[in-house]
Length: 249
Image (cartoon, rainbow, N blue to C red; front, side):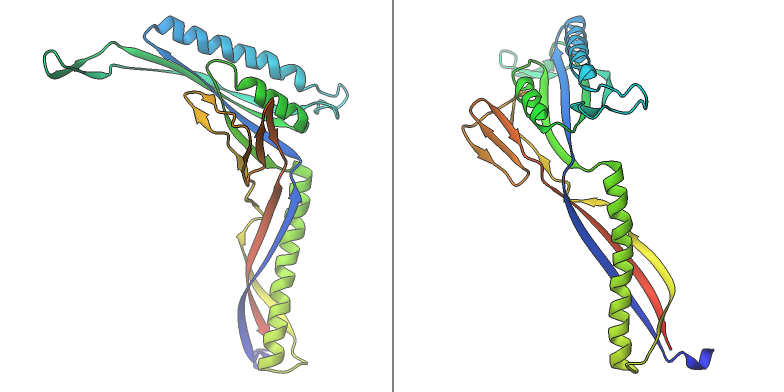
């Protein structure tokens, strides 16, 4: 009854959980540019085809389920279609002391996203690609499997609500009585268990190739030593947050 409600409480509850990454998502760019339209497009097409031929065998499927096999190095990969651009640069001619139109330039670009479950293979391929013309390895983003992410998100939501209820009971005990009963009357989700801080390891880029210093340590789990890169899986953080309205009775 209305008369039994002596207090309303508005609180936020939150929860955060971390798990070691189960997947490493490698980002790769293919880019060619120059003054010959056919050469630029052919180079980008050739390299893109080579990468497709590289990744397809690594993404072996289980014949009975159609899902990636347990020993597949890659669980998924995708390619963005080749796009082209053209422009005419403006150059300064010192002889006539003014700017003029230069020779027309062309570019062709594509990109790949490759999800690895075999981190040793990830390191090998990332290292090999650093020496391939027209290819830039942008870095690695760490993630979880869908099953793990969904399970953690569900648990996070429950914990966030429990956190709010526990705080409400503390306030009710202090403000009304230790025998007070708190009842949830409204709840809004402020953050839906999204992955937070799935860190990205980014090698240093130099003119479409990558510098490989003798030793480079980053918070993103990338180390570079003579002979190749070592992408180390990092924790993936998931968070949930709710806003709850309580009646105290």
